[in-house]
Length: 226
Image (cartoon, rainbow, N blue to C red; front, side, top):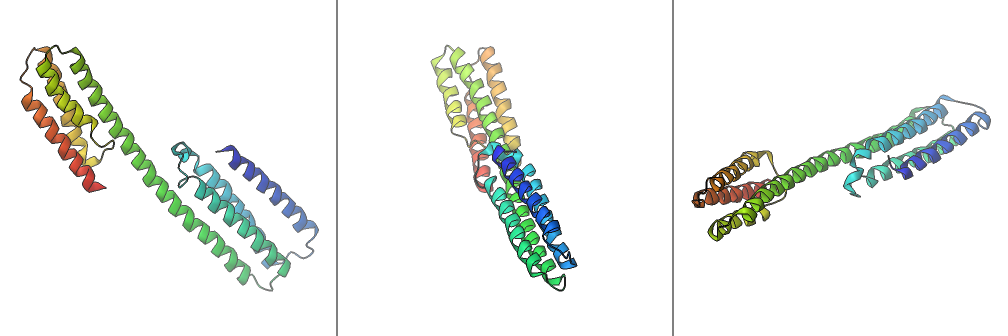
């Protein structure tokens, strides 16, 4: 949890304590309608605490979309609940119907927005993982090909491997479940290249052409999935 979130939670806790002192010492008659507002305010505070705990795992993304709106939504709805609850306590309705509806709407809107943000975070986390996996695949392939290029003495072999190397570096830095089989095949082709180089063979055209074709197919599928 971020430090500023902890500070806000502590500040709101002080507000809640002051509210309780006033409620039990200033308000003389604790009617059912007033108790509804009292419970609604405290429930909103609990939701604020839960929200502050739940978004900590997404802080590393540095995305304003996935961290700060949840804080703003939680803060906003808590303040709305507090403001409306205090007014309703002062008004002191004769029945619990109106305050119950008000607090139910506030908490309902909060939970609706909270679930929307959680859903967005889930998709963002999945996209982040796909990008990390894709980047690892590209870096791994590129490093293996670069090692072959750096160790070969043949200019002809170097030129052939370079075409493969350039195609890998130009690939999209993400992956999809539909492209995993292509990535496995590409990695296996690099293994075949390494074996061919160790055996002294320079007949690498077939492997390079097949690898480049697989990379292009991988790019096509990723583009279709976006």
